[in-house]
Image (cartoon, rainbow, N blue to C red; front, side, top):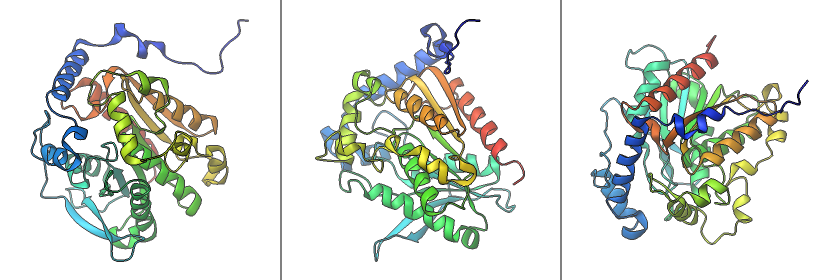
Length: 341
């Protein structure tokens, strides 16, 4: 009997032969758009955010939906509130739970109000109240401001969600830097609220290791929305004047967290089920593979879906087959976790 590996990989997902012409075209478009204007370091974060708001960075301006509303919740800091964007199901029927989304943007870009379309999709597909948190941004507010805001928002939903919104917190989601904050927030809830069971995490192309020391992120030069130089700039804005060793703090890079210990103290002795999504042309591919592997090692459920040739943030490309497949995987994952709710 031949020796078999304890770990197996579907190598076809990483084969260049399986990168579709559509994916190549999408990547070429994104590369041109990314290269057509200045970086946020060149014009400054405030100016670049203004350019994004007005659709002047090579990509479309954000769309605001009238059905999405802002509410404010208290923070740990006296006199400072945190805004949450809220989208309730359009059918007016009772919500089955709360879905907390944490946006990406390298800890530097994005707002809770740029997520309206995504919130609507989650709210209406799953009959959930979908919320996005307006955490403070770097470099004006470096770490741990972002972590504190996301934890404070999640704590509020755990403590008061059923009273205020009529449902309990079920899911936490975050893409890219938001995936980092989603994992960090979930790990906090496991410690602080061990009896509050999270149904699942959705973590597309998460940035789990801010040391910038993994092979893919250090060697990826192509300007597909982000590359090694841009990621390093985000890391330095988020955790300025820190060494690689300092950025191994699990509150900065959750991949270094004691996941075995967290799982041991969690409901059922496991971490919440997690869905990881990533393309192979993404500097954060190693982050996804290693984080998911560490998740599995604890005996917890981690579903990993890899998309040949897809770049960072590919799920945001309208009509893109890989994005549609990623959404189908998300729907299947969440519906499975919502059985009986």
